[in-house]
Image 1 (tube, rainbow, N blue to C red):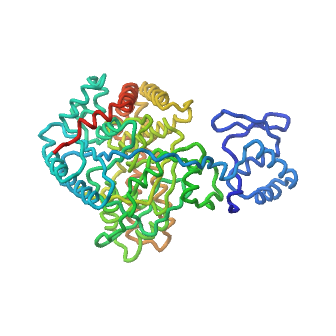
Image 2 (cartoon, rainbow, N blue to C red):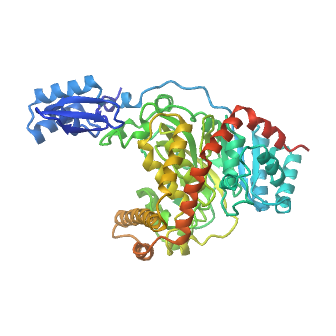
Length: 576
């Protein structure tokens, strides 16, 4: 046992004076309260970050003139009450659960037959070299059979070559929708039918993936991805305690170097993590326990007892997933050093040749990017179709209806090669593209602590009711709310850019500093303008979809999970 396993930190909550030199401690979830003496309240406050007992007693004496015997007695009572805990107590349960069932691999596609063919060819190559067959579900967002014809040809060829494929195209989609109650209501049908709300969103395909795999697990892959899944250099298996969703990255000027292909099956590795508790993962794989030093239990919330991994996140190798290079500049010191290495080239920020991910696995309390694997054995939400950030909206609402969820970022990188050229450097000098779906995600995070109970359906309906209440304001107030939120997002990005400038120091390339300052100026000017009309309208539409469709979605998902999804997957099987 290391010394760090004996360190202690205060449980979250708050203390209020209650007269008579006593203080009332109330837990963060408001489910427990305890009367404390003044000394106990002071020691509880000082023990917020993890530290050794000796350091805490010494700090109480030095900063509060508290005699060591008084501080020791106060700490002993806090420990007896369970108001301070060790890392082992915080992490809790170390029992491994049985592995989750094998996933269906869902591919979202729309009129990109070349990209789809590349992905399926890479899947065939993987299948020939692996003993583990996988089932692939192709979800085509095409509006008509004519739109889907080229993709259908690709699927027929891949099936003939031996790939196990299911296909949801326009005809199959119409048949499936006919079996869903209330699907003729356009306010609800827009979640699944591209002819009802014709946007560029992939959320409809996302929603079909959730329904067609309900009761099991699903691996989400877009058609501009490809296999194999690779490892980042110098990756490790033991877990980091860093609760941060930001990726590490490495940038390349010439040809993309070859990365080591995973020797393990990537889906097997992800399945071994899905549904597990933090304690079980730490016990099995090891943990960088020293990282608790100076961290509060709140900062380490993804490692709290009672949590389970709801989704697994992989990184990418190839081309950057975003259309703007701005976020490539917001990263850790090692990644920033690699970005700015000499001889510096601003073209690195085009992001066409890079890898982004983690070298050490970590658990996070929130996520924003499309997961490699999702646990669909309990109710999950739908993604609103009015915006583009379907993954962010889905994951934000999922965190709110399943507040005991953690998200595992693993050191594995899937190939990503956008079909269309993206001038990410040029986009960096325009206002940040902020999506209405992310406003809903932020709203879900905000209201989640107000909700009681752990029933996912009840929590989803409660969030929908709160969304409906929020919609009751007039257009001017709605625009003001969206503008204030947009400004917080932009201000946060500008602060992060400023931190990157500070981190880079005086030796940073002048060309890069000029680019950062130019991006800062453009977005800082936006802070004094109202949110764009499209953002205001899109965010309202996302709220409307949630408030209108939550009840129907809960019923659809439950019916699918009780056997309907398996029946439909059988009907969608492509046969030679």
